[in-house]
Image (cartoon, rainbow, N blue to C red):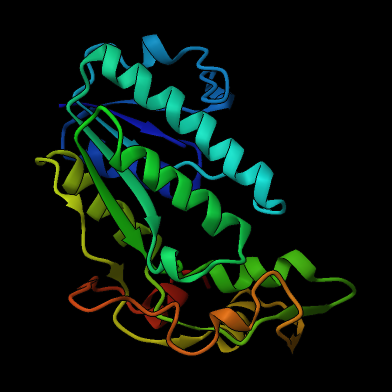
Length: 247
């Protein structure tokens, strides 16, 4: 098949491209660095010529709610309109498990807008809600790290390996549209603070972690809110297995 991956230079996007190409599919890449700009639509027509399916693994600004919603709204509208013109038959969106349960987070608000547009849009679709990735804890700690100290929320998550996310996206892209897919998650719940500590240890870094809700993630994300829903699809790679690959 001819498949386009939006956000192709990002972590999940690049892994999805690799999975699809390994299976013999012809993949085109959408990324601003590659000359295709979803915000303006520049380069989209060429990127989607003859394409049967599109995987949207793009990311966006997360600091300001209004900016994030506007960004995801604009890029998703441009992408869906170009897909309709090109005759694309399947739009696959990577989203977040529990996205409707978190009201105050800017990124979640942007992803809800993206889901709304896709589900009401002109192209048959599958939305794939994933839990947080295995590298999420260290990334979050990195946002606030200063002089060897970082704040991090004590979230309970059930993280998933980025490569497993890519495998699921590649599998779904070559199939028929399914509507809303079950949540996808890794096999084990984890504490985010402990994940960050163990990741830093594996990388040979010493960072003092200060658990606090005074971060991007507030108390509305406490408890089981971020865990996958009933009937979730559980992928095989544990956090320990992923961590062993980072050393």
